Length: 117
Length: 110
Image (cartoon, rainbow over all chains, first blue to last red; front, side, top):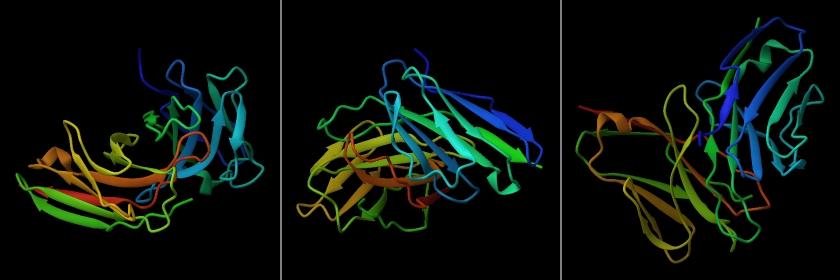
């Protein structure tokens, strides 16, 4: 039914705290992506899941960032010891991807606006 | 990953046709070309996708020359509500994530 859902829509946290951002993809979509977007910039790739496994996590900026997708549907992006520079909109997208089946149409959520104060 | 280059910004009057060209000189054989639209405070939204020649849907047309080293998104008769950032992406399913550039900021003026 619904599209990609992200919660919370807004999160304000203090520097040094731990945060979790949740993404509910479209049912049946095997691929899930996390991005972050700063003002005036395009979305910056963080991590990409195929099913339960991280197919590409090369975009995670450092080891404070971690993401899981234990059952191949819902995903959680976890940020430890948050810093003010982590403030951004975190976007999640999902797509129905088959190997060799051509291009990818991804569906994005509205994002979670994270503000670290 | 094939890199894309597109204009940073464009202005247009309402009712005009807008063409945004994207360069992707090192596009791979399996790559598709996809365009997304993003409004402020929203996630990007898929507009159109193609592999070669021309694709048309209810929103836009996509023109791809034979060498596939560029593509042009055509928006017919734009309105104020088409003011957004438009991203050109190149990639193929199942192996690489979507990589966004800075996009083209289209401003439609009354």
